[in-house]
Length: 156
Image (cartoon, helix red, strand yellow):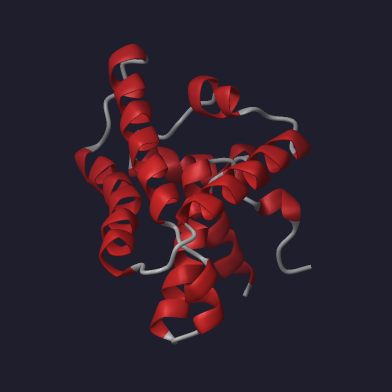
């Protein structure tokens, strides 16, 4: 199997980015069924608010010090979808998309026997590019989006 359910990411923001990429592909290739029903705008807002709260928690409570380029890349990954969806999304289903994505995320977290508190508050998070690469090579990399992408590329 090319992608199994255990390879889905543990971060809600990754789920939002997947939804955003699906919408973006629909927008670029003019796939009306996608652009009509997928609206990642509210999910992008929640992702950005959550990201800011999460980074502040890591910096001020956990005393993380991020490599500047790594933090910039993380910020872009979280804020670019919000800017694009705010600018280009024109349909009426943002709340539906938010609710469905949250429900699916909660079901998945239950399936992998984790909860968001563990993922965001207790798990170790990379602070540098080197830590990310190290984490991707370990068992912990199985649920980190960029690690999943790298593993898929290596399997092609």
